[in-house]
Image 1 (cartoon, rainbow, N blue to C red):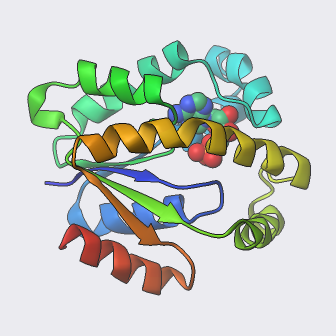
Image 2: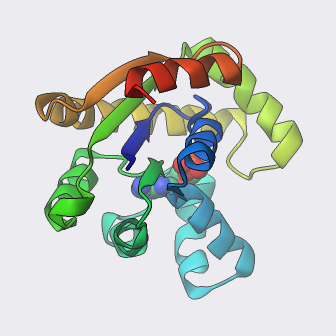
Length: 185
Ligand code: AMP
C-alpha cells in the first residue's frame, strides 16, 4: 500500500503525478492546497481564515493544516499520496509523531525542475485554471517559501532512508514513468 509524500516546487507537477499515482493504486490523493481552495471558494469560516495566506503565497499556520490533514491521512485505508503536505520540517515531524505506526510515511519522492521551466508552467496554468496565486509575483514568493522550508525536510526524510529524487522535467508521461521506476511500481 502506497504511503507516499510527493515533494517539489510550485509547478513541478506534484498535483498531476499524485492524481495519476492515486488512480493507479487506489490510494487517496490528499492535497492540502486543493482542500484549502475549496474552503475559500465555499466561503466557510476556515476559508476566510486561510484566504489571505493563500493569496500571498505564504504558508497557512501549522495548527490549521495539521487539524485538516491528519484526519484525511488516517482515514485513507487504501494508502495515500500527499501533495503539498508536509511543507516544513515542523509539519513533517508532527506528521511522523501523530500518525499511527500502520500509516507511517514509507516513501518520499522529490521532483526536481529548473526554475525557468517552473515559471513557464505556472503561466500556462494561470491561463487554464485562473488560480489566484498564479501570478509572477506570488509565484516568486511561493518559490522562496519552498526553497526556505524544503532542505530541512528533505534531510529529515533522507536520514529516515525514505527519500528518492526524480527528474521532473519533460512530459507528464515521462515523469510518471520515472516515478514508477523509483517506487518500483
Ligand atoms: P499548493 O496547491 O500545494 O501549491 O498550495 C497552495 C497554497 O495553499 C500555499 O501557497 C499555501 O498558502 C497553502 N498551503 C497548502 N498546503 C499547505 C501546507 N501544508 N502548509 C501551509 N500552507 C499550505
